[in-house]
Amino acid sequence: MNEAKNLGASYVIKARWDRELVPEDSEECESLLEALGAAPVIGKIEVEITGNGRRATRTAEVEVRFTRTAIKPPQRRGKAKPLKEFEPISINAISLTGVDPPEGVDAVNWVLLTDQPIRTLADAKKIVSWYTLRWQIEIYHKVMKSGCRVENCQLETADRLKRYLALMSDFLSHT
Image (cartoon, rainbow, N blue to C red; front, side, top):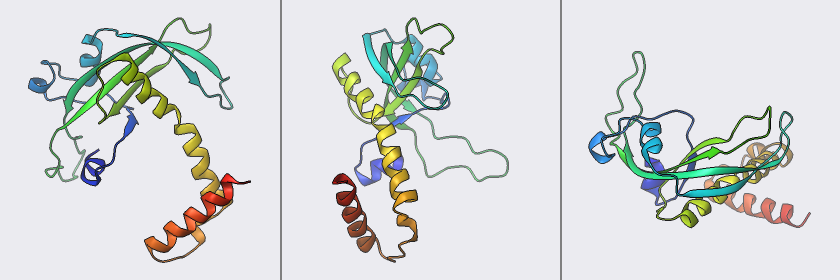
């Protein structure tokens, strides 16, 4: 998140872990899940859940909550040096919780973190739609890495690699 901020890039990240917050910047909540749990449900939307080998493709209805908060940098474990160069970072968080999932299917439970502003259900829906593009992006990267073997091209400079990736992307878009 800090690197994206330094580069002027935007991001949408699915959180895997609860994060510690700066309570004074987070309505006195100490954790991300606590802050999202305290936020009101602003509506419901439908999201497409892509199938994989273990799960069928389906549409899930989810409740949406969001909050603006400040997360603390992660704690280093063991003998690792503390991350003194990182300061808390302000983010927007969206919680998506499945409503009435089919029997035997786990309910959707996503927490998305972004630097994009969220003021309305439409804003949250836009961020969720960006996140759902993740599957297509992962397939694209797999094709570039495994099919086109771009890591083996040994072009030595970033400019050469950028041109090669542009050429391969154009080629793939026409096949």
